[in-house]
Image (cartoon, rainbow, N blue to C red; front, side):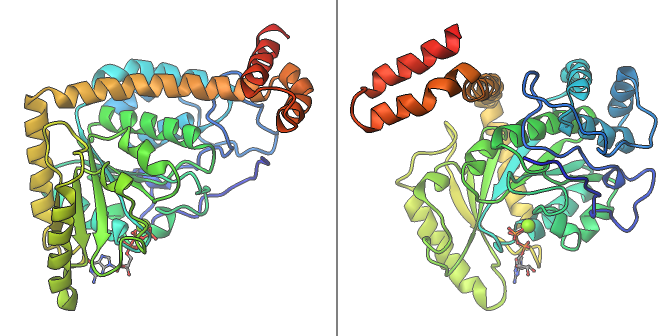
Length: 376
Ligand SMILES: Nc1nc2c(ncn2[C@@H]2O[C@H](COP(=O)(O)OP(=O)(O)OP(=O)(O)O)[C@@H](O)[C@H]2O)c(=O)[nH]1
Ligand SMILES: [Mg+2]
C-alpha cells in the first residue's frame, strides 16, 4: 500500500480553533498500527504545525471536554506511526476509568436508505434534550478524502454545526481490523470527553456490520418499504444482528407502504432469534425528513437500555465485547506475522503446489507451515 499525502477536504464552514472537526487529518495507511507491524513514516508525511501535546495535556484536555484536544487525541490514535502508538495507548490507559458512560448505537442500512439524514434528525433531537452526541463511521473502504460521512457535510449540516455534537469521519482505508480498532478507541475518547450518546454509522459492506455490532450496545437496521429484501441486500443474518428495524421514508405517498412493510417485518422477526438476550426485536417506521418516529425510536433505545441494564445483559455484553476485541487484535497480529514471515514465505509456494497436486494432505501442509513459522 502506498502512502499518499492527504489534505482533508472535510472542513465545516464554521471551522475554527474551537471546532474539532476542523482539525488535521489522521495519518493514512493500511494497517492497525500495532507494534511490529508499523513502518516508519516517509519524510513527506504531513507534520502538524501545532505543538505536540504531552500525555498529561491530552488526558486533561479530553477530560475537560476540549473539542480541539479531543480531535487531536483521535488523530494520534489514527496514526500508524510507532511513536504515536505508544503515546496514544498511554493516553487511553489514563482515560479508561472515565469511559463507558454512554449508550453506543450502531446504525446500518443499504446506501440511500437515509442513514445520514436519520442520524442528523436523531442527533439534533438528542442535543435538544441535553445529550452530547458523537457520530462516528466505520467504513473500511473510505479514505481521508472519500468516506461515507465525508460526503455528508451537506446532509448533516445542522448537526455538524451544533457544538453539542461531534462528528468524526471513518479512519482512512485499511484492514477492517485496523479501522475497527481506531473506531473503538475513538468511542472511548468521546466517552471520556463526556459524550453520552455514540452513534456509529456503517455501510453494509462485507463484515463491517458484524464489526460494528461487536462495538455497540444497540444495533439499528434502517430499511425501505417497497424494495424487495433482495434488492436491499438484507440477509436474514443482518436482521438477526438488529435490536430494532426501522422502515425509513414513511412520509407522503410512501406512508401506507411503510406501515405494511413494518407489519411484514414484524411477522418475519417472530421466527428469528433475538440479537439481545431478553429483548424482542421489533420493526418501526419513521421519516428522517419530517421527524416523525424519531422520538419514538429513541424511547425504544432508552427502554432497551433500562431493561437490559436491569437484567445484567448490558454489562455482560460490554465485558464480552472488550475481551473479543483483545482476541481479535491478537488474531490479526498473528495472521499478519505469519503471512509476513520469511521462513513461511520460502516454502509456501511449494507447499501449496503439493496440496493442489494431491501429494500433501491439507492437515500436514498446515503443520509444516506452522512448524516453519515457529522454528525458522
Ligand atoms: N422522503 C424521504 N426522503 C428521505 C428520508 N430520509 C432520507 N431521504 C432522502 O434519501 C436520500 C438518501 O439519504 P441519505 O441520508 O444520504 O442516505 P444514506 O443511507 O446515508 O446513504 P449513503 O451514505 O450513500 O449510504 C436523500 O436524498 C435524502 O434526502 C425520509 O425520511 N423521507
Ligand atoms: Mg450516508
